[in-house]
Image (cartoon, rainbow, N blue to C red; front, top):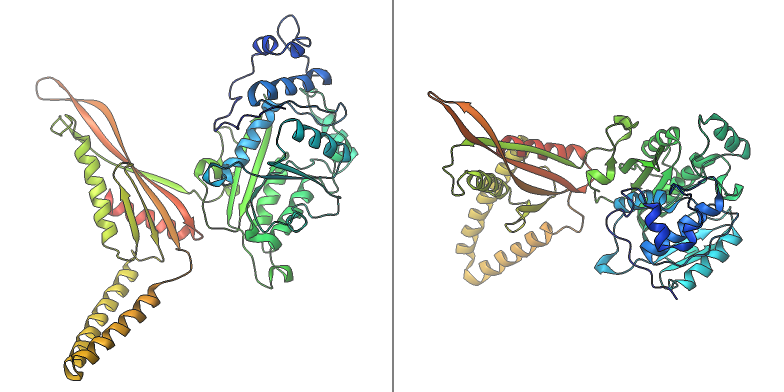
Length: 471
């Protein structure tokens, strides 16, 4: 029985697979390698053996794969899985996640069960035979109250005719052989209808799934799905008669193989915000328009200056860094209702705010409330002196308890953020009176990361205030 290795944090196939090395490690694969160390990807047996050999070498898996089912190269599939997982939360406490895999094809189910047993994965992967009319996310059938995330690679095509037409439009033949069946590649309405159905189910499940993610094979589908997520159609009786707006989304683009472009889309009803790399993953040559991308969850700005080496480290960077940190800590202390904790060892701090308390209107309101509370306390003190010591003490104690209980709120903060301080050094030459003098250019980059919240305007306002007060 095989003992599979955990999936690494970094992509295993960031670089091309060296077929000559793999042939030495896997003689079965070597049988398909040409004298020039190239592989004939039009040979389905060669493609299948490549997948088997790579999964054995790199992940410790022993697999049996059917000859008449989809078998995309594993090095092309690892990236989309890695991308989808980067959006969704990881398992807590280092535990291995339990995966449920709905499947409508009986043969695929049989092979999956065989491979699960052969690799000692029964406690971690549970296949479920479903019908095409069953829910795509069958939590109730599985007896689950909630799950962390979904990963989906939907059938791309709406019909067999659609599939053939797509192949005809390609300027070059497919890079790899395709042994997929219509069940795996075709669904009524294509991937757009399939993922739209996922969205409709998510409106019912909502927080029972932390993140819904899927891959898409057509650019037109990306635009349609993002628009649907943001549209007014996400309301109705199923949603309890209230409008549901899905604004916490992620969109990524990646190149699968050497030239195939694919996209990943994720959405959540929660308020935890994914990183920029996870939610706005695009390259310089990306086809994604800015209108399709979610609001950035990270901004940065710099403060800097020049020094001739008067600082404690010979360059002054520590002084500048400490100045930025001190200014930020002092600023956070101006807002008592912001929960702020700075960790010197990490040169970063995390904070939470229940509302916008930094705007001019908010500061004016706070001042008025402070003045009013001061007057109220003065009157209470007078009543204490008139009513007697014991009675007055009891009155103040009760008032204090009421105020404390009123301040506690079970609702989550409106904004969660992380501020990181990064010291950077550069050099520039400036011409002095007599000769060239090298001066060090010091700079501190302040990175503000949106951790939690639903209001992008609130986050933008906070970053703007921070920039004005710190820079």
